[in-house]
Length: 394
Image 1 (cartoon, rainbow, N blue to C red):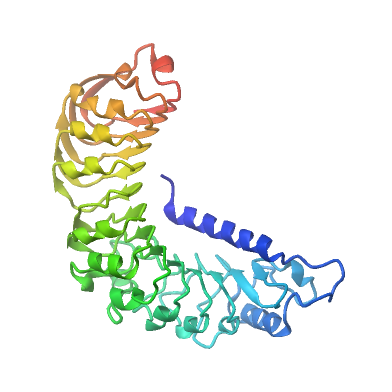
Image 2: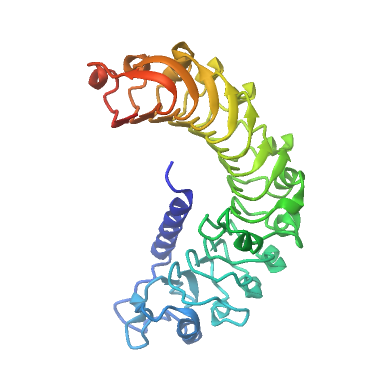
């Protein structure tokens, strides 16, 4: 499925580019035909550069043509900066009185992949009331997410996630400094952010929410399309009201300890490392829109249910590192998933002899991993005809 954080970063850059085209920020042929960048906006940018931009990056030189200033998008009619991409360009944290918050017409702000060195998130973001897209992913901030974020009522996409480099599981000191939601709690943060359709909180400590967290989203964010809560210390059952999110197509809950009844509208479901045990629930067969399903590294047992054949849209299936059992005939359900491109069944307790022509219906299959089972694999001479797109087989 690729790196979801990297994919979100790429889509953010594409959005910045789209707004640039829509706003036509290129300099006109006749300079000073109309304002292209206000003096106060240039001043705020140059002051921000002095405050926190890395010295090894050549950025926003006063003597250069500011029409070419990297990562800056402005409205040529009003002269205000409306988009700013500072991903991986900061040398030190941003503080409450930063000149950045003087750019109060910003709609898109990307500060991803900068190191805030476990300082708290500054409170000045509430001055950026026009923000629709805010990306603070992988910035190694810590402590309570500020209450001021709840004032950003124009937000469509909010990314406060952090990957494993900022919250390593085995580093207890860093683990204690991970960002958290206690006061305000989750409901207090999002109850006024009714325009949100994308919310990424991976790595944020939500343990104080108890089991009520799943009831918050349908009430506050009925139009939510993407929700990512990996490594949030969530536990217990997921309330059935989550299925009221009829527009939700991406749900990520891996590295938690959950029991879940997923909304049937989902297209991508990641539940790896969630300490789930028992057999695959029969209700999974109702998620007929799924294209990606990851149940790896749990404690699932039993055989692969025949009902899995109902997931006809699947292109990615990962059941590896569980305790599934069964012999070759039990792969009958998987062999009917004709759209599969990636199939991972490694490190289970499957047995018997597998011939690749048993997967003959999987004409789109590119990767097949059956390793670390109690099976023997017979490749045979018909691989190219039965599985013409297969690039890797283990």
